[in-house]
Length: 224
Image (cartoon, rainbow, N blue to C red; front, top):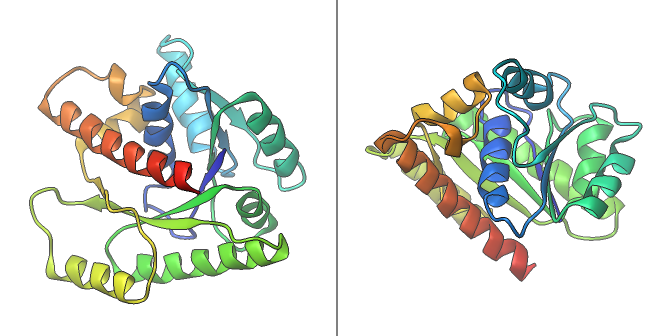
């Protein structure tokens, strides 16, 4: 199965979402997992994996495939899906062929967004692109909003209003939100997975958060 993670809004947590979800699914020894880094910035394939190699941390528990080319992305996804049970795709933007091709080949698209009006507008553009990609492929491509970088202790009024607006508009979203936690930033900075970070309460909370998100996503994928 292919799960694309995309949004035209920078800083919403696309790479972090893809990386942490791949980590929690790869923790299941019965699953073969890969990440296709199709973002031109190569945050995972170049930055995260490069840091991992420089620190001598060994191979990650999932394969990382680099392909920022819209000319070959469909071939790359087809080959990755044939080899792995679950493939996450990290994508930048929604305006180019890359995102459209990936969305049309996906079993699920996840759109990370922070609880803000600007991110809401970007999510709307992503949903339209996914619908259009599905129309071109003559099928419906499932999609879910993923609220990211939320405060575990405080739910603001604007946050509540945004959720009510999404729900009122019938926009499907993952009920589990990806919280703002230091371990998610450390993962990207240190080239590690959540399970490789030094154990403390903050790391345990981040792992628990991601495990809940992974469980919810797994249930949705099984039902599709």
